Length: 361
Length: 90
Image (cartoon, rainbow over the protein chains, first blue to last red):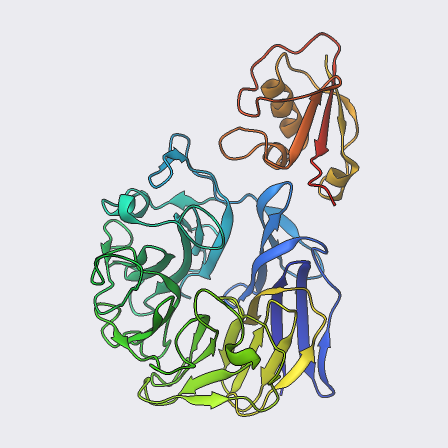
């Protein structure tokens, strides 16, 4: 088999290719720069990297030759006069938290989610971006909390576009929840019914929830999964209502990433972590959990993963699945791949920089 | 006309960048002139709001720019402006 993985790390971007002799890593790109998200746009063959320079701000970069050469692209910019409601400060791009190519029918469309909680849309493959004002200025905005990657502003990390109708989009926002539009972003409504939260006075609050990642099944887009701060949830009605599918006694509960199988709407993977106040591998032992029945039950998969002295955490964009192949990378710089849906794992390296994103190309 | 010197780290992203004179009566105008000569460089020095980025230090002569948001003070004639990266220690 052949496969390609694109890694965003604290110290640059790596492309790993699986050939006949196994996985090989190509030369580091953007060396020394934190790549907050890196992925391959299958529509155009473009590799995209969101860069979080320590000194010089947030940039976008793209490669049209598989990562050999890169061109900087002007990042989205908040219009002058835009105020972030929760801080009452002028909005400025602080972090690219989501980067989502549009549908094949809309070849130039890109979605960029950001801290401080804004969604930008491009229809010219990144040459220009427009802020979705209806979402940014939403009447519930004042109730969105702070959060998302150590920032004091909300972070928009998930963009889920309905492949049947591009006007239907869900976004996941840390400390706000899921917001839903059915008219291409002109109007938005909270879509958090059934979610739990343990940190608000009203557990059924319309907003203020904390999804960590939201992802739909490509083949059955009404099936949507989310790893939330307060557990794992699944929707079978396009995000209108959510059902708790976590395990009361663990390990499936707290965590950051979730990967939905593209074809089977009953299958998904999570990488559990110990509770929100600790945030490391459960019991010092790394595991992945997979459900094959829509969350009614979970298989906890440990074969090939370290089972002692392990404090790795997997960030929200650092788990991906392509067919039977599943990969995830950790804050400790470990990269694991399974080619049998998670039954057995192999470590592809333990000395990578802290890994922020893992995507199959 | 102010003379501007740059941290060599910026040359990684703008290989043609050289220290030199850039026209402008205020720091805002000088950064705008730099951005015209090297499109995009202004966004490395200033954030979306036009303030000097948190981890960038600008010196007017030998003096560190303290007000990072108001860049419309007149610059002294013939002054050297230095655009460096801030150190966070360590």
